[in-house]
Length: 106
Image (cartoon, rainbow, N blue to C red; front, side):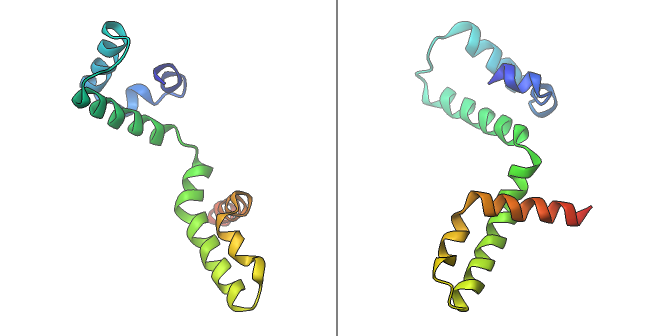
């Protein structure tokens, strides 16, 4: 995770000096984490890194594509389309809506 974050240039930009030091120490000193306090601290750092490494399409899909797909699905269901309930969970449809929304924003 550390190497991936460094390669994507988010490790130093997103994490504070204390968080980077904590990760460095854990990797140097232990093989496994047994402390729940340390595990909670590391999990919050990992979540921060994952969020920073998330691509723009994935972010837009989560924030814009899912609600838009749910809205379109409800409208199509009200018109009598029986398979429209599956649209709200279709990853391809959500990604399509996200990308077209991104292109219309430019």
